[in-house]
Length: 336
Image (cartoon, rainbow, N blue to C red; front, side):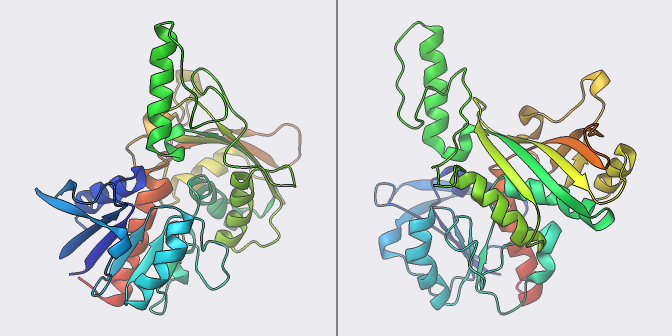
């Protein structure tokens, strides 16, 4: 049974990974939890016992089989090489290594076949990229994709625990006619929408939008995929949504798209808008599946489809995808 370490254990994604390890009965002989010195000495529950959090600065990865990194790019760049040198398989949720040509960027339902026994460092994509490529890939295999336009509606949990706390505190302040604090986001988040996720590049795109574009190309292997993105932060606690417009090389009607996606791994169709059945963040939160609906023809082009999805950004968009990678590595390494 593998020895597992989680770097960034006290963050939103780290906590999600701990819960998923237990829920999915991932075989763990020993669990090491690492965080900053502020959290060292605190404890977190796992399988009926309390695990003490250790200071990452003095982390020892000797004997660790899997190290899940969920603490940001700077931490990953500093400590992931130490973990791989100690013999661990590192699964990194940050953007540190995603576009490194020597590091596989994996969504198991799309390109899990790329994993092999030699991989010691594996990157997990952005929380908006993962559900997007899970939809695009099976559709591209059936009807070659010509162009993609995606707009994301991203929950505040994607910006960390402090972002969720700020949204709740702002809502409470507004309803009680009290002044509110704005710290995490550049503007008030409560009852507002910000076309601003991460920072802006000279191109005019945000770094989040650039990640979606470049990572989608790498995961699908479609280096020349014509894709553009607009990333938007919405006042939702958890669960990202995406409006996706897909133009195909040949005809694809909504019924064909529903059938393809119905049979695609990790996707659940919710598409009966007349009866108000469609994906929503509230429906997606806490679920493994990517929910897809509002599938309809794009009437502005010959071979176009519009659809809408919602997915739990902390679950499939982060923790679950990382654990699914580890589960596949388990099979390759025959660790059980």
